[in-house]
Image 1 (cartoon, rainbow, N blue to C red):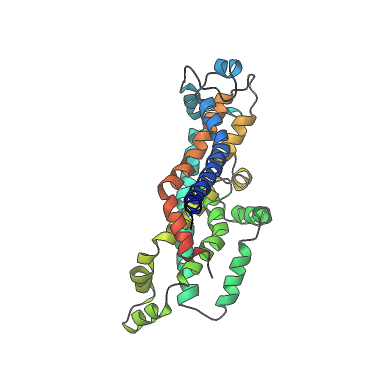
Image 2 (cartoon, helix red, strand yellow):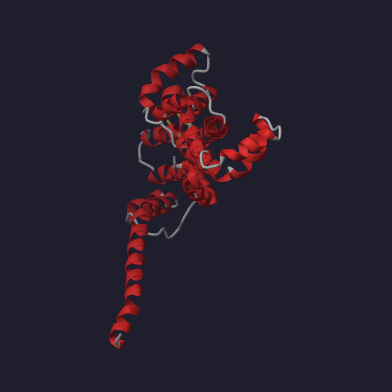
Length: 293
């Protein structure tokens, strides 16, 4: 190989990496630009917004829009900010995520390690449930909530999300547990271990990745849900997504874009924090079998 060929061979990988990094940087800039605009707008005064341009950095940043969005912005006819609705979403998402994840883990365990007559049909029906759109369950859910007197309540909304999310959580855990050899369960049964002993001692210790996948998935779906929130709750019971929509669409004279942007960031922060803290586990869970089988 000539010296010229060797030099070309050395520089080709560098050129390829340069092209890849350039594309990645441009993609990151493209996707992060809206977030940048939201953040800088949320720390601008109205005067700075009217006199400046969309991407200009504020000369005198202020957190007043954040304080207004949290405690005094008007959502419909109520001017108490988004704090009440934020805590509504917290009280909704924590039990809904934990309950749906726990039931999904048990269902996936049963469907893979304790197979019963009709288990394949049961799993097929659950799989079909993942394709049912939100709109199809609105009337049946409303009828059930009315019959059990949980309409217009956080508890009723928790129930709705648990039921709707069971198909997804069961699918995730089933496809993870199917990769675990059944011989482990059989050996434990021979040693006298029962249903829950095997679940606690064998299945749960290896389930951290899929638990993180399911928790992140459910948290994101439930926290960002708008349709169920606007249909099954009203007034002070609304979750933050509905309150944010009402705040942005409330007309009280001058449009306060800085307050709207601050409220949007407040609504988005929990899901962002969840991904930042547990994002690596999400990737591990997916590659560990949660979308296989």
